[in-house]
Image 1 (cartoon, rainbow, N blue to C red):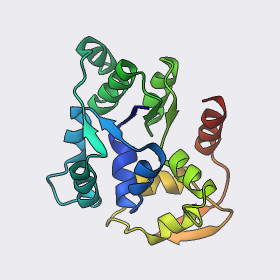
Image 2: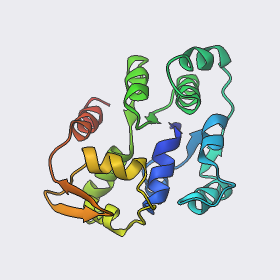
Image 3: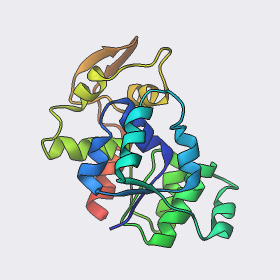
Image 4: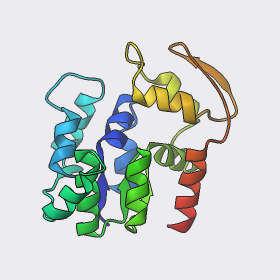
Amino acid sequence: MPVVSNTSPILNLAIVNQLELLRQQFGEILIPNAVLEELKVDEERPGSQAIREAISFGWIQVQEVSNEPLAQLLKQTLDRGEAEAIALAIELKADWTLLDEREGRKVAKSLGLRVTGILGILLRAKQAGKLESLQSVVVSAEVPEGGSSVWERLDRRCAIDRFTFRIGGFMDIAIVSQHIAEEAADEHHG
């Protein structure tokens, strides 16, 4: 049951102190070298310690991409981490490919891969009773100064649990986002 991840699901879950959800839902996570480099685990950044521990415990493992021509082709339209993650997922016939970026998800789905991302992982955890609410993940996490892409995405696309809340100056009104609908559709078709 191989599961391959791009950078953002790992990094964003680590930032919101929920990296363990990946292990609980998927067991072992495989990442290509490009994703390891993008994670910058040797630097002291939000989430870095949790990622280092997951790698040390062996449930996040680095695996080289064998199909370099496919990875190169994908790099023409995707960033290096996404391209290598998709190439590795195809090589391994991965059960799941963890991607958050819209273009990467679109390419992965067009190649027949089963895709989910941070929101699908959080929704699955909530449905399984591992999280009280998605809002609690956001409220309990440290918001990096000036925000970050995870907070901006949560602010734009993930108003959750039909609440209004304020995080680090962001205001969000709960709606069912297109991204959540896509995640639900992926769950039912996969």
